[in-house]
Length: 379
Ligand code: CA
Image (cartoon, rainbow, N blue to C red):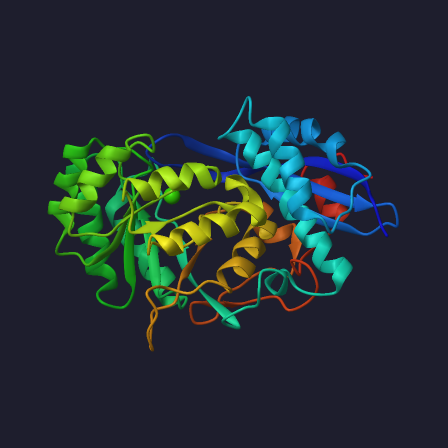
């Protein structure tokens, strides 16, 4: 039986041609920590962590010695070993992202070793293709932001997306004007979601809900601080717009707190941060018990997107009926060479859907030459 021989972390980075920002900070480049787990007979799997890449790398290096020599098929047992060593210091946060990156690589490896796609390991896919929504419509410093956002949204609709998510968080008045302009531009051709990245107080969030309640908004994402569970509960009770959140939440115990507060209608774990495939299965079970819809947060390379594809292909909406809407997967459309050029295949939507890989593991491959071009110290 093969044993785990190496756990390597690679930080890849690429400067953006044009910077953009959201309510919290500005992006001038994209940087991600990837993980490769290799067996003593030369088989390997890829993972990535969502979070500050250099910190994720340090976390991967912290966990790696704990699983060297271990059985790569024993994903749950290896997860427990790593989590037990980290929980005294980081029950939540970036150390969980490092654990997630290793866990995802182990699941890719496990699928390859057993000759089945990850969705088979997860219990089997419910659909051949996954509905994706376009994430874009960030802020820039140029003139005519509102017009630029409206034109960008129309571009996504014309590319076949049936749902589009835009940023809010500049301020209630400016946001309401931007949302209205985008809805007017796309008409009824696509769903529209808004995301403030926890920019607002409860009163501001309620004010924005009132300001855009006639714009047919499918969800209001991260309206409040992720620590404000009581605020979420009150906002959700008073908002005519469904409330989404959870990309800053970690581990099944963290999500238990979110669900216990009845904080969200839609929960958005990032599988590459919340604890990997091993933990998101537990989170999905908890979401199911609370009748909360799940749509993963996804903001990384093609590895992270493949992770979301496999997982959401296995998930159903609740409570269950004929002709249910399908769960969505987030598809970042901002400039990101790490997403577009590092992995093969390059995932592309057709009529707003992306086919689920059917080859063993995650179904992606990485070109070592491209890794080096993006700054990874890889042999
Ligand atoms: Ca978000």
